Length: 110
Image 1 (cartoon, rainbow, N blue to C red):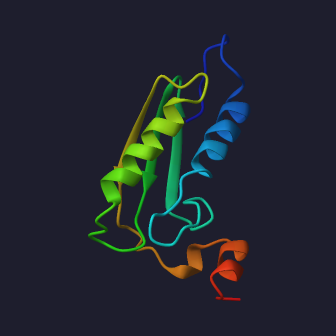
Image 2 (cartoon, rainbow, N blue to C red; image 1 turned 135 degrees about the vertical axis):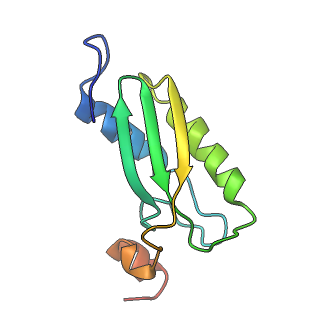
């Protein structure tokens, strides 16, 4: 749900800024951003609180906590965001089909 106080940027602007921040977070093994890889499943904004539901390319990734910490930090740097929670989800399981066409090309899938 995208509800913001009137003193904050419109919901669509805030969402765009958060997505831009997420596009700077790179998967440590693959080296592409988590948005292009399709790792972010949900982005919920409620006032200044943001919930990012995301997955990993592989269960048991040793860099998972580092990636979650980076996501939280970068989202919380967006003006209008007071707090970010990152929730790990495994359903549906991630697959290469979830990647953007650009990411697929970069990795040689297309």
